[in-house]
Length: 426
Image (cartoon, rainbow, N blue to C red):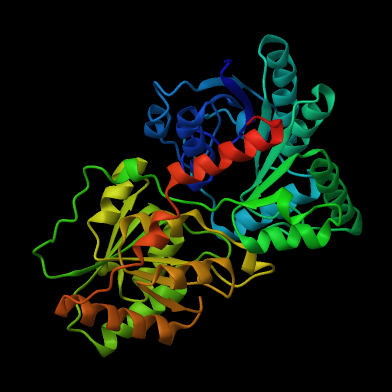
């Protein structure tokens, strides 16, 4: 029997780093175990905030074929195709609004045109059973839908975040809003199956697009890769400090400032607590300066961006982990990949998030202190409570069955089933 084959559109893909690449990368890693050979269309060398070649190494020997094409997007135009610094938040927001004004649906549309051209060539050379695309960027969804329409190959689209109504998107005019809705509707009418990261996104899509049924929109959450945890033993350190770690970047509504304020309060009220704060990722200079102004910089170890496997190791060496997402439009749909990777460590968590999908999953996890994102007093109280449990050796363990449900191998099997249902393969 011929092995089934999937044509995959993925702009964010290794050697790019950060969390946006991991969902598709891990799907590609494990799809061959479930009878699917992926052919991935992605970008050539581009400027980006982080690069992690180790993620690409995970695909070696996994029967994954990678096709690269260079577009005319801004990341490709920059002379320096390596790692570039993330601008200050003020300037990043200005650049984002300018981009949302002049590029619809996004500033990757030039690359998506190149990806479509390459996809047209590949379908002449290979027999594909399904086309798969994950967004953002959503211009890539329009390219994949165009190819599906032209060839009749079933399309599966994956939402990591909302398209229309996305919490970070700026709609300067009615035309922009209408155009995004129209483009999204056109894509979803082509799609055979739609996968989303949480129930709130599913509800938004079904409510907005009356032609969708509940069966066509399937929830496949973010998760953790058990292979990332191998070799990282849960070693008890002997320094007596309470190590609380954050992994990732800060931008827009994801800010360390409320946490810093809480730490300052803890230090004032409980100077006996030996806090040891670690940041793995991109802690920009503006936040390091904020920590200095608050008098807590001496508690912070900034590791910078590390290869993913090393970052997981630092999580495993910690006593507890912290994450936050601020309040914003449609915050209930946000599904930060960070939380689910934290789940794999089975560490106690401090989760500062609004009502929505993240909070519900943190509640199910069990070993969580949950606060509103800007509630400085609650965050400070939680840190003190966590330390007291740490000192007594009574930090809680999570619900094991909940953790097991976010294993990326299991999640990839679910995606493979959606591919099969799209192609009517049994």
